[in-house]
Image (tube, rainbow, N blue to C red; front, side, top):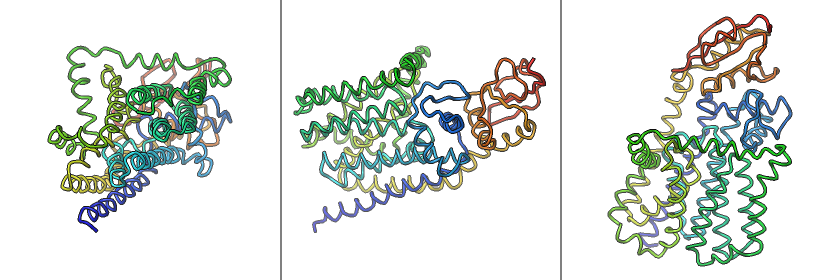
Length: 465
């Protein structure tokens, strides 16, 4: 066995270990209290269970515009463990989606580039940085959405690469599942990839085959069929469009230059530390030889898919990094490509840094996260228990959809598991109401609570008159 072969075998073993340990580290975060917007889908799931309505998601009793696939998966696990474990169930879905995405990435790279070490390096980089410490396990729909975006793009590529039209069917199903997970924008990610492949892939003619036309037409029609037969004609396109318009809110010229044009790419670079640092340095050193590699044509396709999908979110005045989670796998692949070509020393350094990252994640999950979720961000469970002491058997409502209110609502709904989940306070009500501002029209102020920097107010109204 040659020295290079032994190096590849050793690197592959370490990279596989990194992937496995990174995946296992997610289990350490499952039982932590919810944070941020995790309360959105967990509260919706509890409302689904109580109302036995699995097609129309509601939050605080009002229609929620996102489709319910993420909730359906959470529901299946919650039915096994019970409503008290709904946050854990949601994180399990996110974690499994993240790990499945990593597995898809390995499969894709091994298929397209025929190199196991390169495939494992791509997955290890994908499961590092931001995804390892935060995005890969938080109970947001983004990871599941990213899984379906990646699978749709991979299956589209496989259809052309293998000249097998049946892969279009798998791509179409992924598109429909992606829409049902979160939002219509999966079609934009897919359209960009399709245009790049149409321009750069040698088998582009297959995109115009009869089966391709049929599958893609059905995939496009699906959201409208869902709207007609499930949502009574409400397509939610208006909600998506209105939300998208918020990304265009102008922050001012100076803020746009500093926070968008400069800070956004820097933020993206930080999300893939530590290996992104090696890639930046080596990309500069290898700038004249990157294009000469025999696999560069495929890398060039991936580069343009990433760049063209990044640009709208990068240039939008009010965007956020988590919206581009669907292109994280291909970004990781591009970083791995540079490290892969940089030589044995760079590969070894990357592996060592990835190991350090995983070790830090375990320390972070064992020592810092329990403090952050229970103390630093405030103890929502303790607040919920105190509110129930005041409310007793009286009616209880909530008018707070901030992250603090959502966290509190999850804990209250878990403690009140046999009662109806919390809803917004009607115009005339009797009982207690929680709000994020001192609204004296809700009655007499009973108590003020603090969850980190957020204040929550508990009011009591003796009569509905």
